[in-house]
Structures are given as C-alpha cells and as structure tokens.
Length: 242
Image (cartoon, rainbow, N blue to C red):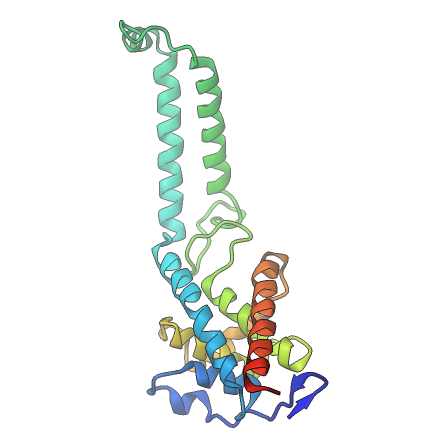
C-alpha cells in the first residue's frame, strides 16, 4: 500500500541487534530496520549495490596510518626537503651536480622555493588539529589519521542510512534513533566491517555519525543515494505493472 507516493511504513519487527549478534547480517535486515517487515525487495537490492563502495572505503581506511605514524612520515618529508635545500645551497655539492653532460641546474631557484614550501606544509600539517592538540602533542584516540573534511567509512555508512530513512520517513533519523542505528550497524557488518571495538552497546556508537550526516561533504553521496532510490522504486513499479 502507498501513501502519498511512498510505501506505508510499519514499525520494524526485526529482533534486537544483540539477539542477532552471532548470526550473519543481511541486506534484508537493513531494509526491515528502515521500512518495516514489508520492506520492498528493491530496497534490499539497493543496499547490496552500495555495499562494494562501503567495502572499498573500509579497506582504504584500514590502510590509513595512525596519527603517530602520520606525524613521523610528515617529519620525514620536512627533513628530506630541508636536507635537499641545504645540499643545493652548498656550492661544492651543486658544482658536482652540474658537471657535464648535465650542465647548470636551470630550475634551482624555483626548486628551492618549492622545497621551502614543502617544509612549511609538513610543519603545518604536523601541528594541525587533525593530528595534534594545542600544546603540540599527538591527538589521542584510535581514530586513523585523516585530513579535515575527510569522510570516514562509518560516516559514509550512516549517510546512506540517513538518506534512505529520509526517503521513507520524510526526515533524517534522530541521532539517538535505535532503528536507524541498527540499520547502520547491520549494513556495516553485512559489508564486512569489523564488529570489534564497539563496546557493550554498538548502537550507541552510531549517534556520533548520525549527528554529522548533513555535512556538506556528504551532499554528493546523499544525492546519488536518493537518485538510485527513486530509480529503483520507479523501475520496480513499472515491472510490477502497478
């Protein structure tokens, strides 16, 4: 049954997430948390199509270095650039670099400016809020190093759920909405996301991400998610002859 062009929503009747902790999560479970026990098949397929993107995001995030490791790498960049600067300014060294057939280093001045810029960039990055506290110490926490504005895999997951929730319910889910949190965590697990490190109640951990789902950086992802939802439902309606 449809109401105002939208499927009539019944409350989800899936068992609490804790009861499903040892069972394999499915995209059908995700759909039921959002659209209720009569969730359409096309919605299940919708999440299955987005899953590879989430899997890729998870893989990329796993390869991201820790904040400590990133600061060490940036320090290496700074030191290497500074060392090259000093080498080019050392006349005997430069003379050997310019022996035949190579000839004079025509771009030396521009290259020195580039190296100086790189030194400054590395130093600013090391002391940025993304990596360091105001007193210069490495920011605590297990979160991987990420530049400002970067979207984490969990935030990407929450954005997909929020847009789908808004498609069915008209508004984004409240940050504390347990069904939305269950949908996000189930999609996360169904896409191969790790289930460890979430504490005793993993649903509470999603509140932080749902508070950020309207960030401008997620606009493109949400727009594409909405487009695919509309297309999937339209195609389903055509094929069903309704």
